[in-house]
Image (cartoon, rainbow, N blue to C red; front, side, top):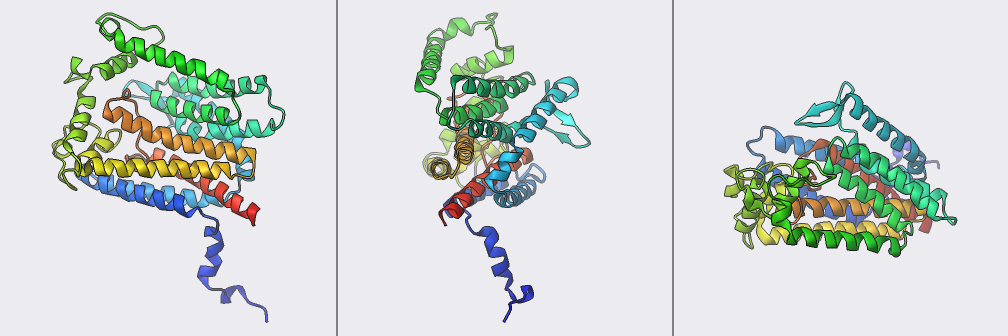
Amino acid sequence: MAVTFQSVPLWRRITPWFRGFDGPLAFVVFLLACAGLLTMYSSGFDHGSRFEDHARNMLIAGGIMFVMAQVPPQRLMAFAVPIYLVGVTLLVAVAVFGVTKKGARRWLNLGVVIQPSEILKIAMPLMLAWWFQKREGQLRPLDFLVAAVLLAVPVGLIMTQPDLGTALLVLAAGVSVIFFAGLSWRLVIPPVVLGLVAVTLLVIFEPQLCADGVSWPGLRDYQQQRICTLLDPGRDPLGRGFHIIQGMIAIGSGGFWGKGFMQGTQTHLEFIPERTTDFIFAAFSEEFGLFGNLFLVMAFGFLVLRALSIALEAPTVFARLLAGALAMIFFFYAFVNMGMVSGILPVVGVPLPFISYGGTAMVTLGLALGMLMSIAKSKRLVQS
């Protein structure tokens, strides 16, 4: 007897859509989303509809993740070049007639105001993973040079906006793909050593290098001031150093267990600047303390390790490189945000994933998670 479509229960019809979803990855994202909602409710209680908007953005990101998870990696590969070209074209359009806000030209008005640099956070690893998939089995030094050029073009355009935070994330995503593709350690170690030497010299000669009237070649004045403020925030405690000082006070005042939900004095007395966006980690730390911070670190660590595990088991070079780069994107998001709020990195505009307010960033995270789910599903299909 034939079974009609109408006689099949609804749960059986939708089960195939969820089959292959990576349970551990979905669970840790759910925990981070809950932490984000709690923190946003507390830190954004007097910021109009921040909490409701944050919850809406999470739902939108979840929908995007679900849809993207249904797209097989082979189809994602077909979109790599068009998305990259569209993203770079929009960056050029921003440089020519973009919208300027607070001294930065980062937005484009196409009826709806968009920030094209966000596209490159996903387009860049897609493009480079596509490139190395095409060169599989015949990689030469020239291929890595081409990859470096493909990376340098959007990063350079984003730097001119200027948007250091996004440029660093796009650069990190691209460098991750190039490294995972087989870049020799002999080419990696020298710039790392030079960077460590530069940082050491900067710390030693900070009073001379950060003295009034001293200009560093290749850096804008505000970028130079950010580095000098990081080294000594007390040089301007009510100006450039205010963000870092208040962030560290909030983190320290939380103690081990924190002051309690909705009890953060630094947060609710508005000493923490940008407490719902870039500095929301300080608000979280004040209310949930070291215990809460350890939870966040372990959750993000598990997320990154799970994404790397998906990358190791991916069935193709493209999927493996893409998943590895997406893992590194989550790592750099969390590391840079926590580092700048804690005073160990310069202050740049990088949100904390799932915790900070921001619709565009949440959509980007939803896309990244959907791609990871798609790669995990493709692995299970190949194994079956």
